[in-house]
Length: 121
Image 1 (spheres, rainbow, N blue to C red):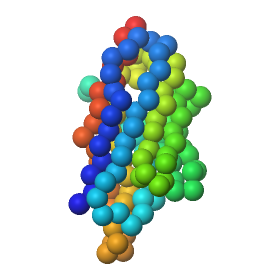
Image 2: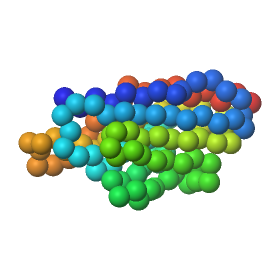
Image 3: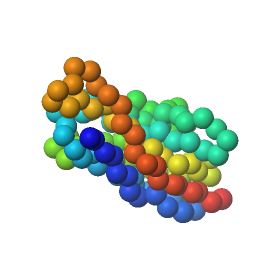
Image 4: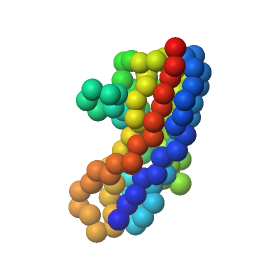
C-alpha cells in the first residue's frame, strides 16, 4: 500500500510564505505525477499545482507567480513553496500522486490526509 504524508501547514498572516512537503512511501515502481489540491470551506476541491516525473508543471491561474511546485524523485517527495499568501488561499491542502506499483499496469491515484493552511488578513 502506498501512503502520502504531508507536512508544513499552519497559520500565518497575509503576505507570508509557507512550504508544504509530501512524501510517498510503500512499494512504488514509479510516480508519474505528483500534485497539490486544496479545498476551502464550502467549496469543491481544486487543483493548485502538479508536476510530472520529467518536471513539467501546471498551475492554477490563481497561484501562478506566487506558488512553486518541485519534486525530489529519488525521495518520492513533492514540495509546494507558497509565497505572497492571501486570505483566499486558506484551505486544506491535499497531496496527490499517480502511482504505479511493480505489478500495476495502470497508475492509480493516492491522496494524503490533508494539511490546513490558514492565512489571516
